[in-house]
Amino acid sequence: MKSDREFAPRDAAAWMIAQQPTLPIRQIARHVGVEPTSVMRWKSDPLFNKLVQDKKDTIKDFEKRGLWPPKSKGLHGRDWTISDWVAQLLGFKKSLGRLKSPSEEGKAKQQELIEKLDYIRKWLSRFEEKRRS
View 1: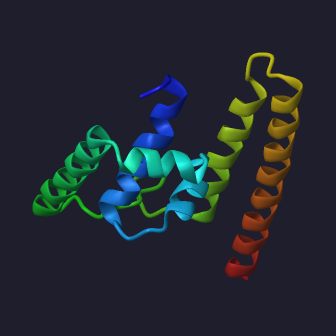
View 2 (view 1 turned 180 degrees about the vertical axis):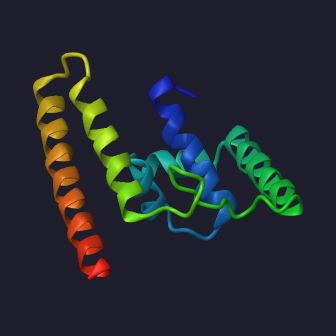
């Protein structure tokens, strides 16, 4: 592996492939935030293929124990509600604001993401209000 910053996308791609081996390379790349050539390179790497196999074995083990697919539980041990999602988004937005002096490009992306989170939060709040009435 070339760098630590490649670890998270590579690991996420391994999980995706372990669950759905026929996913298109471009879709995987878009989801994990890398170029399709990176995913192609990973898929030809024996160590990556071993990582994928390890993830498949983990999934099989979890299935045997009734832990797969994962259950999504909210903040209070129940199924996720819109309020739980909004709370998670607000926590993520707050952590974005605490990033240590990002570059100008990083600041622009950070602001764009914060605006998207605000839009999602508002949409989720409206959705929950309509559902209640």
